[in-house]
View 1 (cartoon, helix red, strand yellow):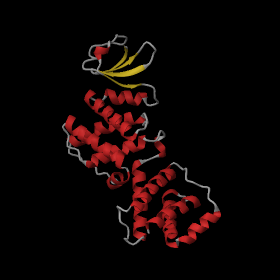
View 2 (cartoon, rainbow, N blue to C red):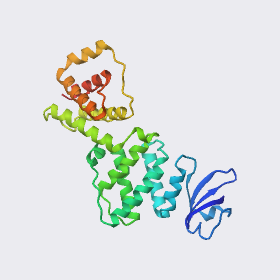
View 3 (tube, one colour):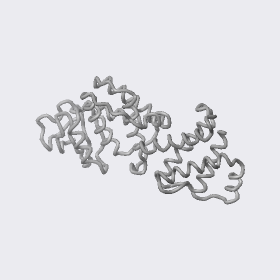
View 4 (cartoon, one colour):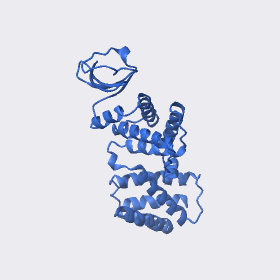
Length: 275
């Protein structure tokens, strides 16, 4: 490895003999070093990430402005998230999470607390991501001597949720959480308080709502439906269908378009199972 750029005393951008770029961490690795200096494997204790994505400049800036300890924490969180979700997360997460952690610590030092308005929705409807946020908070509190609460866990979870889709602009955690919570409340209210949150059919409905909202935000709602089947479902339980139409009215107000007929039918079927 040869140094291509010194980011700070403990972080450098390096290149190997195949001209592949890597970010290397090591105590004092960049101190007094110049471009072209050869590094052996004993010089660094961690390879952060190969630099091969569209967010390179942002990533390098974020790393240059962050402590090596915080960089390592960010990578531990991302590795834990990838393993827990068994999926590859967007490269943009390296930038967004590192920046978030940096400013979160600064706010904590100044005694500034930011309440997550969709804390309950994220904790309830994105339990896997929330557990990753909880892991991150415990790690930060242990390694950085902070005192973050579950509110911060939900903030970190929001970044994980956004990173689960390669196209970050197609999914917004806060927006999704608010919409999911509102739809579930519409259903519960219309059923006049007869819903048991632990009921298996209700839980299935909540999962359905979660993926429905993700489809709406991604603009990929189901569209094809057999007219005869649609009418059968509509006549089978008029109450469930009316509640589904109320959900559709809310979706139209929120996104400008109502549910498609197939989405409306599927929503009614889910509600029918609860009632």
